[in-house]
Length: 344
Image (tube, rainbow, N blue to C red; front, side):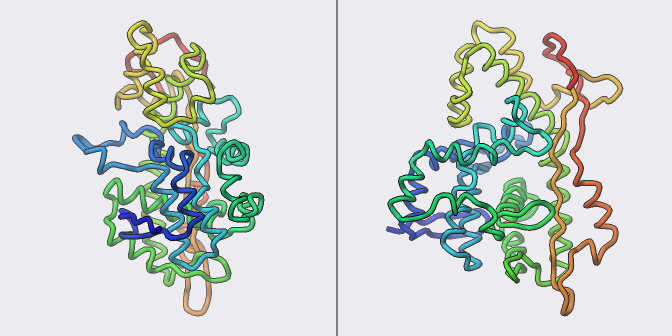
């Protein structure tokens, strides 16, 4: 059996590995089709932008990581690790770090910390057992440096989500994304750009994505407003914590059946769909919001040497230092006021 995909970053791709196919067809992996990569897209969505074109899910990203690793000859275990790396994401992705007490807005690490526990409750262990794959080996990121690395290094996860975000939001087109991929090499289990120019262009793109989408004001508003809605729903028992591991749409449907009799819920729902629900004012604010900031400092070929971009461009070194720190926003409710919340 072969499964064929038309990927918006890499073009026509197929999967013929029986193990990968069984994972993709599992209900837990299929759930990722309903998990938006960013969280809640309404604040970023273009006017009258068809949602089928906007599609930006954990499903396509997970496939993208698999395709990217496969394209560069990665071993089967690493490809599979890439395929399942986001299977434990809750609805609304990293918004969960703003909802649960043990979440971390600065690190956005709840999904990673919960990954092994979540997978243990799915059909993935049985699938791995069937194919004689060691689950513990797959779940240990130290075994797969191409798939996962800490910032500011490149890894397949980071390369794919940045290129996918860039294509979805028309920062670049598919041809430009594929050009970036074609300029990459694998040297000593590291992602290396073939030249400084390509590396520097990519860092500029990533910096732009970070400021606009990963840690920008609209993202802070999205995280806080959606988290307020979800926290309120949990408090009112409109949904249980385990219910947050449905799809975005299913969670909303469960909660919104209560809109008719709950004015406060109505306020929170309107707020999370209103681009102008907050203003950023450090001198007069209702809540402080912290966003994880993401920046890369890739390595590239420079003559016969391999160097980081920051070693060649001192200005980039300063940018990396600045953008590696979490961003803080001070949000003041513009309308739909509820009772004042404590500053955090």
